Amino acid sequence: MLSPIYLISDLHLCAERPHTTQLLLDFLGTTAREAGALYVLGDLFEYWAGDDALANDSHAQSVAAAFRDLMQQRIPVFIMHGNRDFLLAQDFARAAGASLLQDPVEIAVGAQRVLLTHGDVLCTDDVAYQAFRQQVRDAAWQRAFLAQPLAARKSQVEALRMRSETEKFMKAEAIMDVNVQAVSALLVEHDYPDLLIHGHTHRPAVHAVEVNGHRCTRWVLGDWHETGDYLRVDATGCSRHLIS
Image 1 (tube, helix red, strand yellow):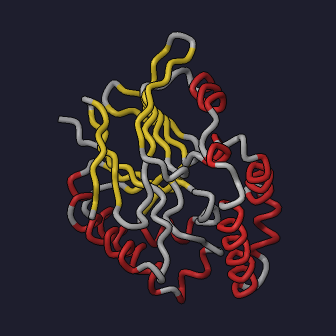
Image 2 (cartoon, rainbow, N blue to C red):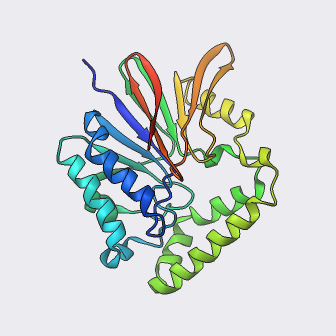
Image 3 (tube, rainbow, N blue to C red):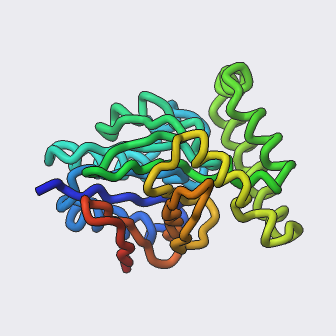
């Protein structure tokens, strides 16, 4: 029997929210061990200023160690960048025993074709954010940013995070959700997968999508601010499960 895959996203872990971190550690030590693989679809951390921060960050070290323990149970872990932790790199991946994923990426679960993305690239109505995303995902920008001292980087990231939180209150709700045409274009580009799974919007739901006569189901993962959730995908389909 094909082992299911489990998917989570938008945990936004930080030392200031120990409850969420404990939810994850409990999940990795119990429920996740039933999976054939675990996929983290972005925003594992509230922010990430560079892998060199790991050496003196006991909180991040505990998270990496928990993922590594899962990997040692022969359960592979895959991590995708989010809009908050796009600077996660190979040093963290090695510490966690995880593999970094491109965004988007297509995987197969049984006969199903499953397309995975963090989801922020689909929010095309937020023009200002898309311009910012293009800037910070540029390799030259990242090299210049990472060349700065860690303390300076952390200060800049914190300022950006606070600005982002403030701007949320000034934007229309619809702007921060995915754009229907962007979803359709992604499905066409990837030849109509059976499932599209993403996070980012913090709006857990399931949507039936039809594009050019092809049917796809779009699943949106929830965040882990109070409780958590994960999706279980096996040969029979997809289901949502709550974590508390």
